[in-house]
Image 1 (cartoon, rainbow, N blue to C red):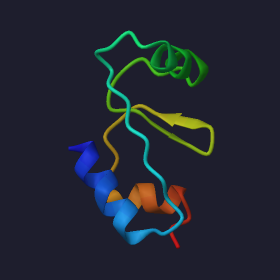
Image 2: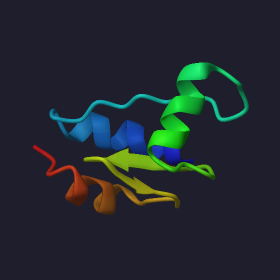
Image 3: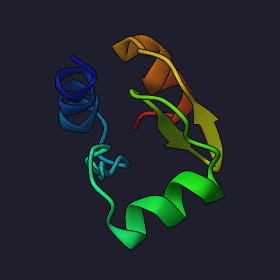
Image 4: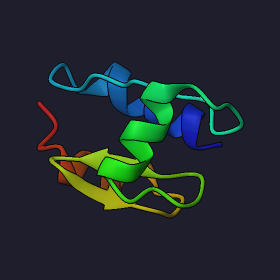
Length: 68
């Protein structure tokens, strides 16, 4: 569900880049990012170095990223 929302945001906001990582893996990069941004649940978004651990609607994400 969050992936579809992020697809909408990305298509409407030229300044947005989305990078998705699987939570059910033990890849070092995922573990480092999880620790760095205190990600303990999914879905989680990191926007401007702030972590949001909840399902976020399109309008809320667009406001946080200053959609252009």
